[in-house]
Length: 245
Image (cartoon, rainbow, N blue to C red; front, side, top):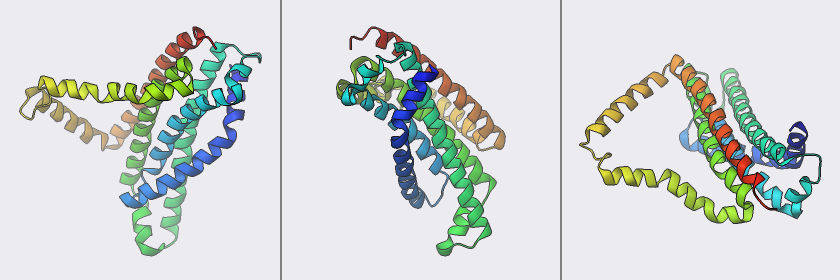
């Protein structure tokens, strides 16, 4: 697996640098719109998860790389596990790079008076740090969820065919459940179930706003990320082993 992982990272090395730069570009505009920098690590994390999965699948079909790779001393199992190792590594790199960038900007804003009121907006505060960490972990959970859905499809169908089905599959997973719940009346304003859900949600959000809540959420998010990627890897192994290349 280590050999396959190093091969994947070598192939994606130049693209990762471009992706980090693009992520910073997007993060800047999101931060300007929000007047806060808490979204920078989250945007980078989600982009690295999603684009890492898509770009790796695209490279599989570029110049027949997916077939050529299997002529090397790597098995299909190694290829699948290495791919998930790369996806997780890229997501973690995005989070760390974003957190470091926020820390540097915060230190600069605290030490030097910046124009246009930026020092006040970027100055250190416990609330900003908690919000930054929460956004990073939430986006990591979302990015890993999307990657865990699309990666098995890429392994089974290939990048070209998968792009035709992924929008429909994502729609079925994320939209249809809400339509079903709405049709059954669970989401009606007067529903007892909805009132109970909203009350529990409000209590959870209030807890997450505390330092202990952020720490608990971060730990739960990490467990969730590893769980969904592990389940997805198991599915991808079965699909890729049975696929005729």
